[in-house]
Amino acid sequence: MNPESISSILVKASKAFETAMRKLNPFVLSGIREELLVHLEPLTAARQFLLGADTNTMDKNVQSGLLRATDFLIHAIKSFGNEKDLEASFISALRAGRKYCRAQEVLFTLCESFPAINRHFLEVEVIIAPPGNNFQSNQTGIFHIGANHGLHARGGYSLYIPENYTPERAWPLIVALHGGYSHGKDFIWSWLREARSRGYILFAPTSTAMTWSITDVERDGKLIAGHLADVYSRVNVDRSRILLTGMSDGGTYALGLALSPDSIYRSIAAVACALPPVDFREARGKSICWIHGAQDWIFPAARTVYSCKELTQAGADIKLKIIPDLSHTYPREENDTILRWFGSANA
Image 1 (cartoon, rainbow, N blue to C red):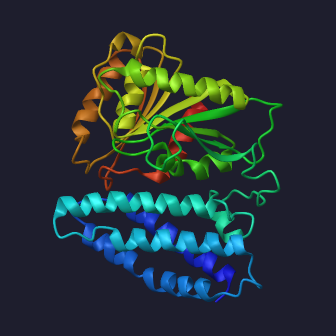
Image 2: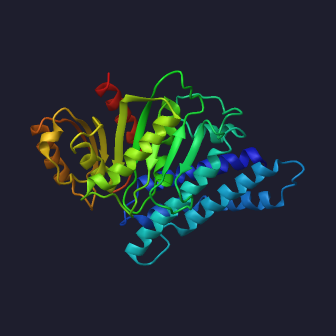
């Protein structure tokens, strides 16, 4: 075993976990868990190798990074759906997802050292050279910004600036809103690969409470507006090409925010969510791409179909896609659908 083979083991386990989260459904957790458990043996072997590796032959920071990512993935897989009670098992799977995100955060810092890891954070047909000296500097990379930098702190934001960013041109922006009880530090990974591959700045704020202020849109709206002003001061954003998107409560809040008076958002991608109380007069001229699962047990698909009809009648341009095998989870593969739609809507 060597560092390159370990990087491949970590990428395979990461892809498997990403697939597991795409399949997430409380009624099939045991089967998903079994598929994940096959990755424990190679991860454990990699961990043993790293613990005994000669620091004279391996960069200490690389060794530490590989070990931390391995530990996060082992923890994520072991804790995924490991409770007897159905509800508790589902919650454990969601918590395991946060450990997976921490693993991705560590792996991303190793892109320069391992081609397999660099490829993991790119779309299939995209070729980008491993980042150079300015990667994760004060210029590009991922930044977590807020008064409190604790892992679970609320009200801050996470920001990704592409490694090839240059202020000489304006860049499109994705505003990605997490679901209830989640965090911008986690949801940013749902969009990082596409943002990096296609040249988007990625902004993932975190709600002040455990979910977005859906019944008082202005409260978190002021928070997001303040953060956006900070983002604008850091990078050159093309303000005519801003995509507002969100999952679950984040999607519901995105719709509420975009359909509020004087909203700056014209293009909204809502995923696995419900339409909140809105003034339908604000729908005219808005473009909305709505992705929903036919097996969503929290927000029935029939309700989404009806909401889209209401929005269409109110003057919104609606693209609705119902995915037959999707439950209440994030369909990562639909980011391509969303960005193609966004490109057409802003052509």
